Length: 227
Image (cartoon, rainbow, N blue to C red; front, side, top):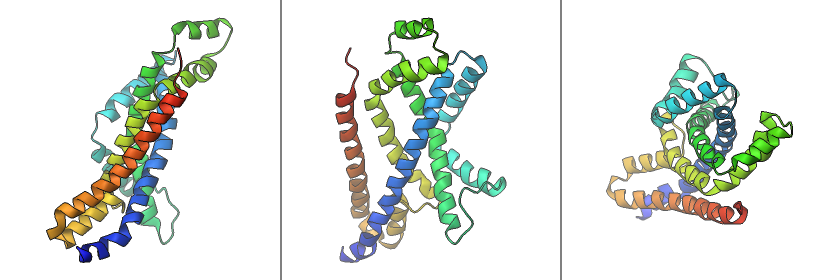
């Protein structure tokens, strides 16, 4: 046990810090792209509605592992898309950013669908009243519908974020040194401590996800729309 802790202990925080950073940047990007997709899905422009519908249906039903591998092999190795400056840490930084891109492309579809469900809670008369005052679609969407929908779906968005946190383990397939990659390396060198290693990694994820759940539960009660 002491041998395991000597090798695993110092690496725990750096590995989970990578997990937290993956979650943070991916969540910000997913929220922005998800809001744009949701706006396109309710847009009066048929081309935008069609693009958003096809994108959400295709990406949401594609395994996340394939998307992450596509970002690494397809975008970088075949198309030469580099997202990091060419320096000594290029491979590490580029893999991290490619993983974030993959998580954004995937998670934004769930954010979009969650927001679309929130749109249904906004009384249609509010949008009609705004249009009768001469407001354009972007103004109705951004000033009337979206703020209320966001406050309605805070708790479901929390569930999407928790799922994203657990999905970050897939980044290990392209060499991002987050918690799952640490677990894999420890299992290779300390195979007789499998249950302990699993338990340590599981507790780490539980601390992160339970904290997220508690925050979003508080936020949902604090900012819920009173009707």
